[in-house]
Length: 87
Image 1 (spheres, rainbow, N blue to C red):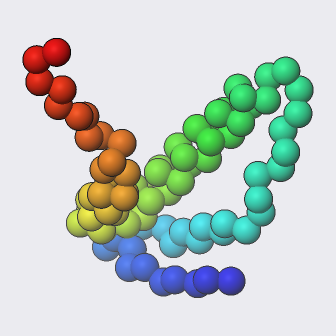
Image 2: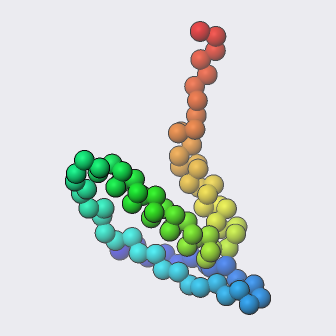
Image 3: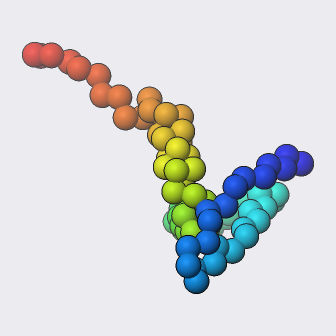
């Protein structure tokens, strides 16, 4: 199991930043039925929202910003549009 330790944001006044522990350990089960695609998309969406909220509320802003940059760099090829010129 991989374990990493990340700095959390500093408390600001009475706003105490809680520690967060994210466990990624179980594979997504096989989804069966006619609506498997919708069920799977709902799982991905709800887990992504929860992960984002946890990271946004726990990480220093600079770390959160750099994480977004790293994620976009990883997926940059999805944003490239070929230039076809005049056809």
